[in-house]
Image 1 (tube, rainbow, N blue to C red):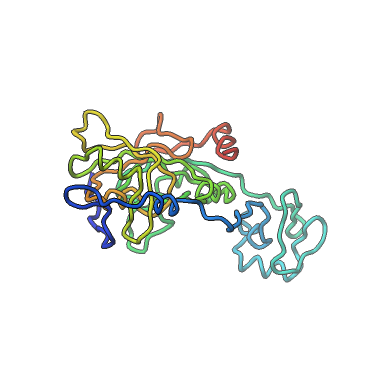
Image 2: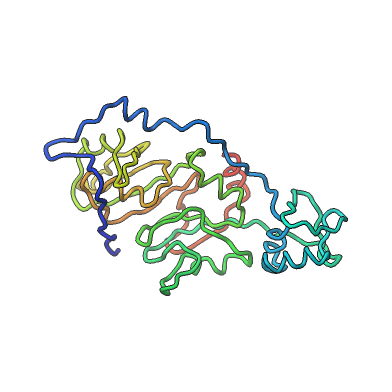
Length: 280
């Protein structure tokens, strides 16, 4: 596996030679308290009529606006010409007298290999994760969250925007477990620091829910569980205490694992798995 980019942060380091920089525990506790006052987003499936038509494959959103203005779109038997009109679950939408069928919801789990970027397309011609799942279904699916180019492991794709929001919103604290291989041996005191919380290069604080050194790894491999969705968070955690992550693999995402899913392959989720994700 290729080495990860060695872009270390320029922020404050969470350690000093000869021991970790002590932080006031009360200050850490205050920083990690959940913010109050910001309401949870609405996960209603109400969508704008133009988006509904576009998602159904009728046309683009811009073209849908033209169709709506010309009066050829009906919702529940009523012609709609209002821009911004929202379609509710269960509404019957007709275009030119024919019922518009919505897309089937798809849920595809990929065990991502290295050297693929998590983006819809790339102007530089680099390989993208969508190339790996292009034959999974006819519907257009999108990655839930992202993994950087050299990080391997579980990546979920779906066209279910409601579920995608739930799995990425920090309030839902979706569990992720990583296997990290470091550039040098790590000590128990470093692990304690990761569990207590470290300051990242942007001044924010993050801590792991669980962390332990993997046996028989010469103290160079760590299992890490966390809920944070920050960009490159695992690499930045270890950078903050003076380590470089050489290999990184996401072995669990929410309730999903890599069991029977070889690297570079994908599978559809079972109904039971989807129902469990929605319940969580």
